[in-house]
Length: 399
Image 1 (cartoon, rainbow, N blue to C red):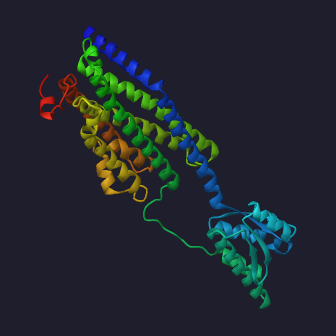
Image 2 (image 1 turned 60 degrees about the vertical axis):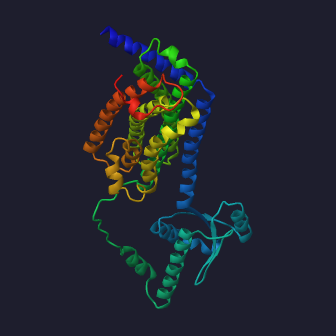
Image 3 (image 1 turned 180 degrees about the horizontal axis):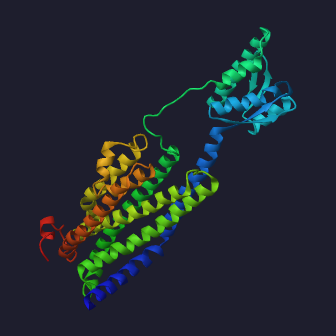
């Protein structure tokens, strides 16, 4: 029991040392600020661009005021919110078009509809105005034939297309895709940055012979585990700040209209998978760093680990957004070393059943425990050796 307590105590000291060193560094502050600005900036841009894409402000000259109500109805039919504004004359209309406060001005709504724009007319607004022009022409033709244009318009409005989906549609799909991509990218970047930081830290201590002093009082596995947990805690702190800040801004601006519980759940699971993935990969990076004595040789031993991180990330950002039910992504997401970068995106898209999530978390934790034993042996056999790169066979020999 006392040995357990002493191990916990010494690992805690290493964790505190690593966490304090990373959090107090200028690089941590700069990278956190840049990540946060990027995520918050994305939320702000999506808010204004999304609002602009689905809303149009149309000016109506006195000769065209009668089409205000029909224009709103037609806009709704094509997925566009049309806001109409009364404009007294063409000079005012031109000025407001130039300053960007209006997207278009309807000058005349007779047999030929005349519309003024600053440069070009957006596709959605063009479609709405085209439908409106045909509706006006139809009303005029019905009236000329002695019919009741209002009755004809009402009959047309009652017509509809009945659509039956074979599979239920996922709500808020575009927002889920955006949220999933952001979560996947953050997890990927954190794993890449902080995973390699572990390898570099091990090599620095080995080159400077600091590790020899540390191992005079610590066991190799204690030093390795403390370093992994300490650097991982710094990465987790950064993830919480960046993801939490971005989520708060997105919900506050209304960029994310999906239920807040769903958005928060995506962020929480992204943090969970970051933790599992980081410990898993950081153990491999620590063992790889212990096998070499120079920073120049780090690339050779860490390249396979980086490849394991990059491959699922590419699949997550290139396949999943358009194919949420991709069999390839589904199968690979069940593999522990691929789960940390694939699962956050699949969770955001709402395609992961509860049993599968529980299974992959349990499997990831089990593999991580196994990695502690294997990488601890590699680290212990390699960290005190200087000079040439340690062969994997020698590194795996019993301590």
